[in-house]
Image 1 (cartoon, helix red, strand yellow):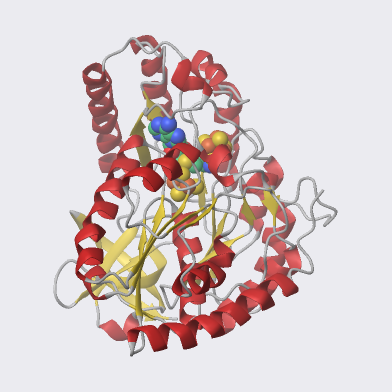
Image 2: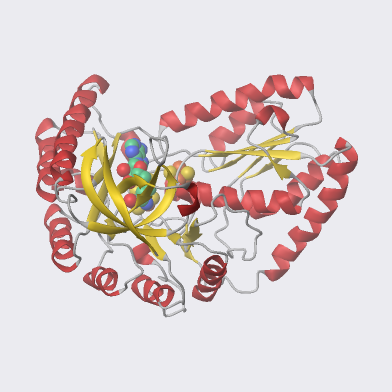
Length: 470
Ligand code: SAH
Ligand code: SF4
Ligand code: F3S
């Protein structure tokens, strides 16, 4: 059992470093320094980067998107697939010239990929212009690392993964003004055989519900209208703690907070998803009518090899219950094509599941071997080319379903949160409580507001008329 309380001392220490860093960095650069935070990977990383930006702001830096204009460049990396890692190496490489032109700038690599011993060693050896590499559980120490390096300390490598306390009160600089991320837990204990996440994020640790509620209240009073709760497996929130709050209860407590806002969450694992959770979505008016429930494969044989702990039947019974209980529910999922040993027969089971459920949208991936995971050592006889063909077949099936789904929207009115400009001038775009985007005539003054929109037609996007601003 770990505790998350009383981390105030840890964050106060970092805050003191931040103040010293601010003074030192200003002296070294002779101006207010700029920091560029480059983020790869999932929402968890996006959320972590908001904390990195918060700490950098406290350390006297202003943020820039332009790497060539920054005195501090940090890559927050992802290791989930090989492609993600290749992109990071390419990006790190571009800082070599910047550093040569200006040796005072500092380059850092953190996040899931940095956590891997082999990656940290490669950077140590082959990327001498990288000043610091640190792992996922010590990101809160950025002000200290920065201070030490600016004071002339050697290159910093810290991959500590001790699954200790979750530091609370780390400063945050959020990217959005009305849509925001709220991490409720970190790490993962599931060890799906293909997945690197448990190795790079460490054990599952839930935040104190009081801390989560306090952050939610803060966000609501700052005007956030769309709050997404984050965790690798939100359904096991609270396990191994003495908080006495499970995920459904946490949702109910956030739902009960005052204000007009929406709650989203990801990701749910089918093995821990319960009818109680589905009932909670149904009963809580602020919780979005959306369930992201990755099934990965429709074949029971492959699900076993993946160590997923559910079968097709259990998955479909959850989906059918969600369809029965939640009106207009939007269902989305993740799928892996070409897991080692998967045959075309297995893949057909995935296709048939997709056809049966009729998901609103899918996140589909071709299996990518991750060194150190059990699946990477399994026999994988099917060629990449063949897997590519299966992948295209899956996309085609999903496209047909998406097209068929469109008619369900026409003529109905939805409450959307206006969140961006539309694809044509004079149009704005918003998302329903599910996952659909609808465009309608309107101005930028609608950004961040809830609008009732009646859907009239479809022309690459759903098009509607704004009826009422709420
Ligand atoms: N915790 C979440 C998913 C995190 S990773 C869950 O269990 O649902 C996001 C998605 O990436 C996974 O759902 C899976 O579909 C995909 N993924 C993970 N490892 C992969 C790998 N080695 N190759 C291809 N896709 C992978
Ligand atoms: Fe990876 Fe499985 Fe954990 Fe998701 S539940 S992060 S897929 S190990
Ligand atoms: Fe990537 Fe780490 Fe997320 S590996 S998908 S950034 S948890």
